[in-house]
Length: 62
Image (cartoon, rainbow, N blue to C red; front, top):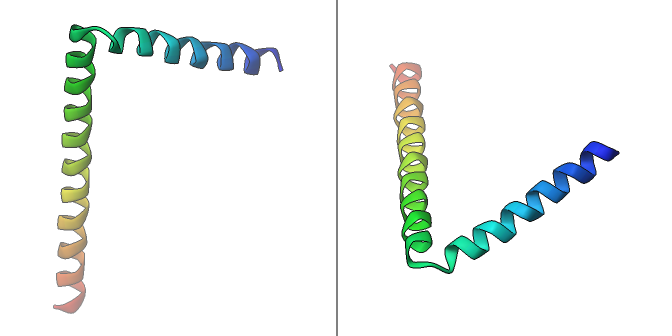
């Protein structure tokens, strides 16, 4: 139970710090960069998934 409390406290502290950092111009730029990279990664994963899915469908049909 003690570890759950520490975990929750860490998460809450992280949110507070992120909120404070996001209020600066450099912080907004940093989070925009992180967001862009995360979205690019997500698109790459989805594209790879769809490409592999198409390969498997073609192999199954052929």
